[in-house]
Image: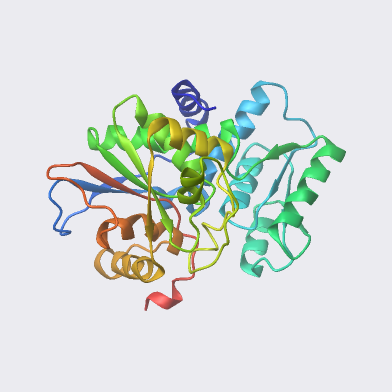
Length: 311
């Protein structure tokens, strides 16, 4: 389980390694109270994942777990980019396992960051298993995309920033895939009396179905946000945090995600992933309706997307 002390320690540990990203007012939305956008997509590598990657590597180094064998991860997306970036910054080797069908642009970006990329299998699960075998054979440090305490604690540092920049909020809307970001932010803000609302596509209800079943369960993955919110099972840490802190899950359809993403571009010149836009879609599409005077923030967590369909 993750604690608030883990998040505070992560903030101290990662200071100077991650960016403090801005928070801006969300005006013109006709809301009954103040609202903000947390622009975390401006983080290193274009997503929040760099926070967790840095904390994982730095904490492991403190414990003597980071050796010359370096680090290993399974991800062709934002998590892999975060690990590759942190590893390069800390001068340790990184091996990243991705499915053979991973987009070439992401594979090349991983290589530009200095990672050794291994193309394995047709599905993510095969790349994940290969990464675990590499860890066992080499002694490298394994970096999970979302289900490790160090990773979740690192992600939670964005919640501390948000609180300070706004002077306090009542509710934070966070898009959920595997749930590492949600777990960190909910833990960071629980002691302050703020709550997290988890936003998921209708087509990938990992946390929603887990809360209904009373345990993490496998779900089918499809829809427009599957490239970034495509975990088929919410993490054990995320589920425990959601259960213990009262995180509520709301579902948004693909058409509302598309509409919110396009509105961010047309009205604010902000380009984000579809998965990121899901958090705003809950507000603009009515899946979440704030009470009068409720202070709401939307966490915009990633921008690794093709902007070609926005113009």
